[in-house]
Amino acid sequence: MSKKTVHDIILVAAVLLVAGSIYMYTVLPGRSTASSSVKVVVRVDGEVYGEYPLNSNKVIDLSTERGSNKIIINDSNVWMEDADCPDKVCVKTGKIKSPGQTVVCLPHRVVIEIKGDNADIDAAV
Amino acid sequence: MKKNSRLVAFCGVFTALAMIFSYVEMLLPISIGVPGAKLGLANIAILAVLYVAGSRAAFFADILRIVLTSILFGNMAAFIFSISGGMLSVIVMILLKKSDRFSMLGVSVAGGTAHNIGQIAAAAVVTGTAQIAYYLPVLLITGIITGIVNGCVARIIKISLQKNGLNDIV
Image (cartoon, rainbow over all chains, first blue to last red; front, side):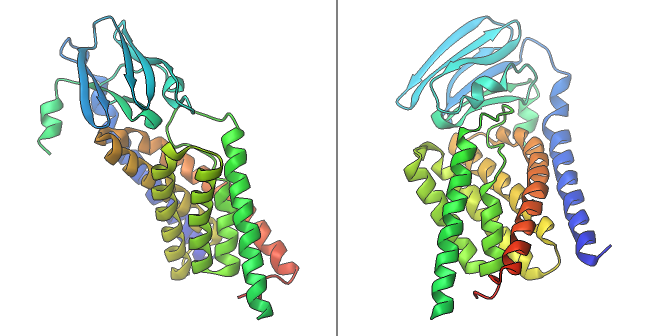
């Protein structure tokens, strides 16, 4: 193996390591919480638009100057039912239910985030 | 003088190629529900420019590609994400190539992952939600895979260009 190939492999391994650590940090801690204090936070352009309990049933029709999004909270799942954005990535993301997970509609700058009751600890960093 | 005009023509053709790749990618309905995940085909052309015509040419070809694709094919909403991903990607590739420690594949992988990191960073700033980093692991892994594939294709293009005597334009 040439020296460059070795460096290539080290590079790929380093990226995988970073991906793994971010995964452990962001995704895994959210798995356990399923209490009533889990909230759904909807943000538009970085500003909080609304907070709703995850175990409620709600249909949120969101319309801004950028476009409209329809968010549904049902059976402790949240998803983007419909959006008039060009790429529809947010709709294709599907249902989320664990703290830390997000649905993002970048063209409309809308972010739906599930926040667990350990949110205060996260903020202390 | 003749050499100079060949360089200009080469960069023009490959910038156009990069734009077509971006356009084709918009038409392909590939989506895994993760914002920013894509094939990055345009990077094939940018890599070819980097290895045949040098750093400066690659840098400007990439800026031109992003600005022109955004204007021509609409999606100005995504411009800020494309430009931050594209700039980080091309700068990382230029630096790694200059270091002369990585093969074309390694440079391509670094470019692909850097593109995704730049995009997610811009998205986190615009939406004010650091939690978007949630998508980074998936994006890094897709960046590695597409980086390897694109690097292979770019290497074939580079070898073929050299066979046809196009490597002496700089």
